[in-house]
Image (cartoon, rainbow, N blue to C red):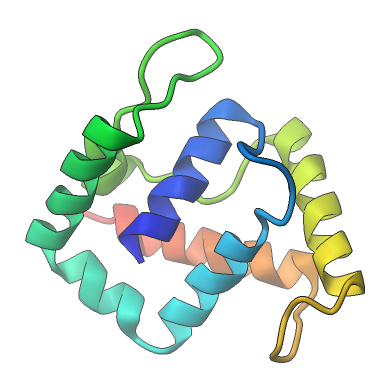
Amino acid sequence: FWEKATAIHVFCAQGAFRGGDRFARHWHDVTRLDAAGFADAAIADKALAKAVADHKSIFFAEKGPDGTLIDYHAAISGGLRLVPDDGALVKLADDYRHMVEDGLFLDEVESFDALLHRCRAIQEKTNAP
């Protein structure tokens, strides 16, 4: 869960996909992990969250548009973003639509709006004190 959630967090901070398209799979995967109960377990496991943030801070250091480092530790400590801003939202919607059209999801596909609604709920529970 945390690996996917922090990858999404980076996209939300940067507003761009790194490494091309088909990145919307991460949002799909996070909702599936949540539905299976894995998100709740990962959110409760603070040591796991810290281990992922530590690892990504070393091996996947990323910068935001202003050139400052994206803080993975802030993401696991109440500042996680799973829903991007407007410009990035359009990119994500297009990527998701292409993935659906290409038949890349094996299970039932929900609408993009439903996906975002679920991600917003996951973001809120993850960031809750």
